[in-house]
Image (cartoon, rainbow, N blue to C red; front, side, top):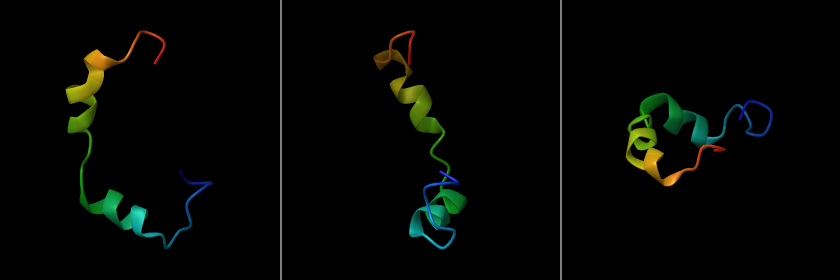
Length: 35
C-alpha cells in the first residue's frame, strides 16, 4: 500500500480509524493453504 496509495488518499484515513483485522478470522476458512 505504501508505494501505490498517495499519502493523502482517503483509504489511508479509513485504515487509520477502522480496524479490519476481524475480517481475516471471518474468511480464513475460505482460503487454501497457498493463500
